[in-house]
Image 1: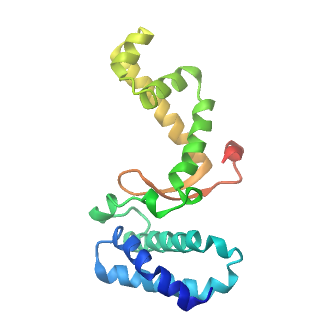
Image 2 (image 1 turned 30 degrees about the vertical axis):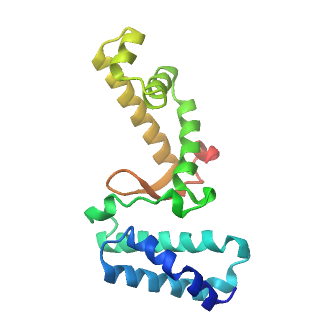
Image 3 (image 1 turned 120 degrees about the vertical axis):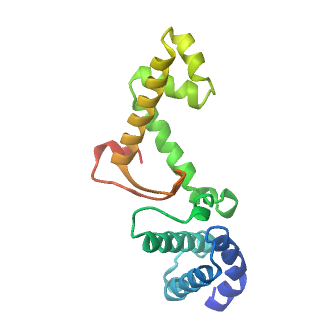
Length: 189
């Protein structure tokens, strides 16, 4: 596929994708231009033409992330509108969905938690049991149940952060990740 065909077919969808994540029109245009410069420079390197769409959206996501990193000097994304603009599942194929990838890791990490934390986290997060119901079921105080769930979440978060570098927005949504291959805990990632 030649560059002009890619431009014609994907300019509008990528523009909409960027607009849904960047509030300023000028920034949107700059990001789109930067995306297509990258596409122009690297299109000949794309070996699997069937993955063109995935490749384009990955470049676009990375360019948006780079934009916010530059804007915030790597601290966090300050733009309030960006906070609510998480990656839309409808914009991506299953292989691109970062949340699905990370959810597989979370399942593995939850399984590695000590039993009391694994149970507390599982029933409150996946079975929608309240912490009060957990306390009643286990015969512990409400504050004990709350502490157990909080500790389980903290342990899970620590496991995940040991394994991966994660880039979050202010709401805790994962925008990007990089696996720490030097860590033995990350073998499942």
